[in-house]
Image 1 (tube, rainbow, N blue to C red):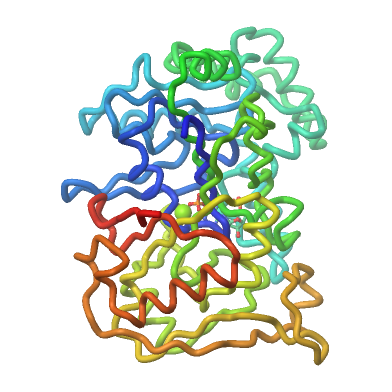
Image 2 (cartoon, protein in one colour):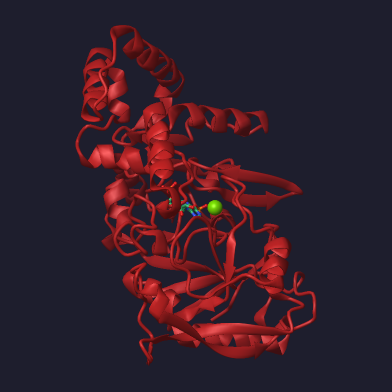
Length: 420
Ligand code: IMO
Ligand code: MG
C-alpha cells in the first residue's frame, strides 16, 4: 500500500497514534491534514512517553518526513514549544518537518474567544479544549483568518490582523497591534524554514512512489457536519478531508484504516448513547488511563457502540480497521456490546446525532462473557482467550469491516496484525 489513511472513527482518543507509530516503520511520509493542537497523540516506546499535538507522530522515526497540511490550524507559539520539547529529547526536525504555507494561524485572540464562547454558553457549553480551534476555523471560513504565508509580509499582516479585530468588533491601537505582530514575526523567524508547499511535496512523494500515511486527529463522530453537531470540533474529520487538507485527493488513497477502541470514550459534552457512570466505568477509566492527553479531563466511558461504529465506517469508506486497548477490558465479568438503538419504541440501527433526539434513544445490548487472562503479551488472534475472540468477531460482523490490527497494551510492541 503506498497511501494509507489512519482515521479515528469514534469521538477521538482511539489510540490512533499508536497505530500510526506501528505502521510508521514502513512509511516515508506522515501527514496531518486537519485539526490542531486540540489533538493529543500519545506514543510509548522504550519506556518513554511522547505526546504530540500538532506535529505528526511519525517524527519519532528519524528518516520519516512529516508534513502539516493546509487543513491544519497552528498556534505558532505552542508549536515552537512542541518542537523545543522534541529537540530536547534528541529528535532532529530540520529538513523533516514541513508546514504548508496555506495552514491557518491560531492567534491569542482565538483562545480568548474560545474561552469566552464556552463561558457564555454556560450549561450548553461544547466542552472544547480551549485551544482556539473553533474561532480560528470560523475566521478562515469568514475569509478574515491569517495563514502562514501572510507572515512573510509584515505590512499586509498588520492590515489583516487589524481587519480581523474589527471583524470581531474590536478596534486596536497601534501599540496593541505591535504587541500582537512583533511576537508573531519573531515566532515566524524560527519557523520559516519549515514552511513549504505540502501539496507539491506530496505530488513529488507520490511520483517517487514513497509510502504516505495520513494521520487523522479527533474522530469522525466529532466531524463538523457528520458528527453530533453542535458538540463537534470545527474541522472536517473524514476520509474526504484528506484532499481538502493537503491537496492530495482522497481518491488516490489506497487504504482507509479506521481506528476504534474496544470500548467508547468521549471528552467534552454531547450525546453519548452507551455512556456508563458506575464502578465499571471507573475501572475502565483507571485501567485505560482515560484522562485527556491535552486537557487532563477525565474521559466519559461507554460500551462499544456498533451503530455509531458502522455509520462511521460507512461515511468514511473504511477498508479495514484496528481495534485498540483490548487489554483494558481484561478482568471484566461481562462485556456489553450495543447492537441497535430503541428509538420511539422501534429497534433501529441508524446513528442518531441531534441532541434533542438523544432522550428518545436507548441502546440495546448483547452480553458477552469477559475473560480473566492478562492478554498484554498476546501477538496473534489465536493466542487471545476464546471470549475475547468472540467479542472481536461480533464487532467485525456488526460494523461490516475487516479487523486488521489489534493492540493489547500501551507499548509500541503490544500490537499485532491479523494475517488474512
Ligand atoms: P485526538 O486527536 C478527543 C473534542 C473536545 C470537545 C470538541 C470540540 O487526541 O483524538 P475543540 O477544542 O476541538 O473545539 O473541541 O471536540 N476534542 C477531542 N476529543 N480527542 C481529541 O483529539 C479531541 N479534539 C477535540 O473535547 O468535545
Ligand atoms: Mg487525544
